[in-house]
Every structure is written in C-alpha cells, then in structure tokens.
Length: 404
Image (tube, rainbow, N blue to C red; front, side, top):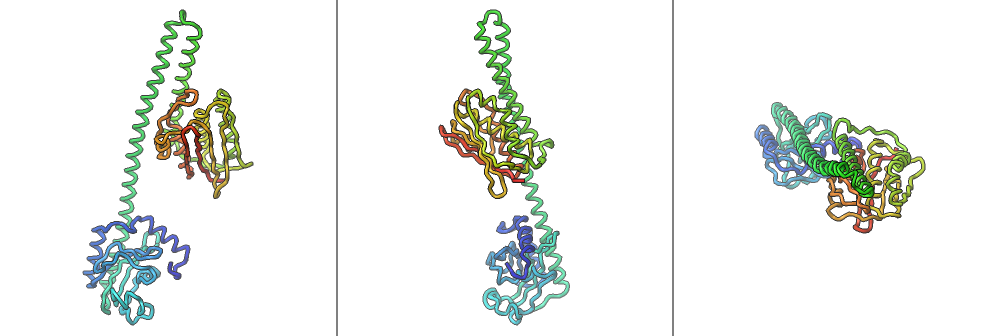
C-alpha cells in the first residue's frame, strides 16, 4: 500500500473496488471501445483502464500494451489516484519522481503520461483511464477534457455492470426459491395425504367394528391414529415455520436473550419425549450468558435439534447440550450417541436441503424439514450451522449466535 494514502481510506477504497467484482474479469467490448477512443482522440500508442489493487495495477482494458498487470509501487496510476484531477507527466525522463522508474528506463519506455482518476459516486478512486506515449508531448485542453469525460463513462459502466450482476443474482435466487417452494408443496401434499388417509381409514374401521372388535385392537388402532395425527401436526408446524422464514412475517427481530432460559423452556416442552425413552439430558451453559438473536428462531432451533436427538438416540442414554464462547460468539453443540446418519443424509443437511428422514429408534417418523429450518434460522442470525455424524456412533450439531 502506498504510504501517501491513509490506511483507513485505503481499506475503504479497496473494499469499494472489490464490490464491483471487476478485478481479473474477462475483457469486455464496452471498455475496449473506451480505450480505443481515448488513444485515437489523444493520438497516443497506449491507453489503459488501470485498476489499483492492494499490490498491483490490473488492466481491465489495454491498447498498445501486452502485459495484463504491473506492480503497484512502480505504476504511474498509483500516483494518479492520490490527487483529484489529472496527473500529467510531459517528459518522464526528466521528471524528478519518475526519471528512474523501470517503466521509463526500459519497456514500455514511457515519456508522456496523462491519467484521469476513476472516481466512484462515493468518492473512492479505483484507478485511472490513462494515455501513454513513448515520446515527450502534451495534449490540448479539449483532449484533456475528453479524457475526463471518458473516465466518468468508465465508472458509469462499472455501476451498470454491478447492477446487472446483482439483478442476475436476484433472479437466480428467486428461481431457486420458487423451485424450493414447489418441492415443499409437493412434499406436503404427499406426506399429508398419507397421514390423513391413515387417520380416515383407521377411524372408519373403528366405527364399523367398534361393537365386535377386542379392546386391545381398538387401543392399538387409536394409538396409530394418534401417531398419524401427531405426524400431521408436526409437518404442519414445520411447514408454517418454513413459510414464515421466507415471507414478510419471517423478518429477523434480534433482541438480548438469556440463552439458558430459552433452553429450559424448550426442555419443558420436549421432556415428555425424553421420559418415554428414559433418556436424560445434560446442559452445560455459562452462567448468565446472553446472546443477540431472534428468540422465536432460537427456540425453534433448540426444539428441532433436541427432538431430533431424542428420536435417534436409544433408551436410557444421555443427550448433551454444551455451550462455549468463541470469538464473541456462543457456540452451541447438541451431541447424542444415537444411530447417526448415512452419507446422503449428511450431504443433504450440509447443503441446506430437506433430508430423507429415517425412522427413530422406537419407530418415530419425521418430516425432514426440521434440520433445513435450523440451518436457515441460524444463517439469518449471521451464525454458522454444522453437523458431524457417523452411523451407529452418533451425531453432533453445532451452531453459533453472537454474544450480547
């Protein structure tokens, strides 16, 4: 970095440059047209659109020069971005700053240089539009003015290019979301149809055979109806949460939250599931730990992860919730020694897709949406969601939330 540019300004300038996503991009005709025009109007053999990176000058477009980039420390453009107007060197061989420059004493043997800064709407100078000659000379006032006008056109094209890329990304994201919604709706209709068909079918059998059916058979059918109903409710809850996460009602509302309080509330809700399998849970959470996040989303994450751990862990086992502080973030780990996942399930979860849900250790069914929701809710809160699992050895889910 050039010492004549303040460190904080240079950092912001480089950040602005990277936002345009133009460094190391392919050559584009619209920019080549500008350099051709600049060279013709100014009557110079060389014209460049030069972008000043942290340690190099990279040429987005070039006329009369073969090299794609140059070292920043010896580039004329590095000096040009340090002033507001044009940098003009009429005879570099006799200039006190540039006479010993390698670009002057050897190829391309620069003598004349005129560079107009490429200034963004926010005032950051990304580089220059410059014209170069191998002999001493000067330009007319009209040629200088034209160079300035063309430099503004280059920045306008940068802005249009960035806007176009954003529109393309938004379009792609919308297409992906639309496809995802179609997949979800297809799954809902399939799963709900199966569950509701079971409820209706079993109910009809009970009504028709109530007077002659043994009480133990009635009880078994009632239990199956209950399970089908519970599966339907769970599916609807997951779908509702997923829908809210992608709609206006799913806006992120961060607040300061006592993490242990949320965990205790979730445990109160799922404790019956643990008791049915004689499981225990152990929570290790720093005293008074507060995080900054959306309470409902965090509640849903814990509910899904603990219910998942319960489902795939055998009876009389322990499930662990361990929380540590790492780099101003709380890292939460939910650990079980259950059935684990196969590679396909693991890949689906890591890619944020709906995993095919296997039956639990007691035959419990799942919807496959819960873990997909967890990942989305964690990422909405600028957190990181991870999973590690081995079949027949157990699973560890972890996620991070900023500490308040």
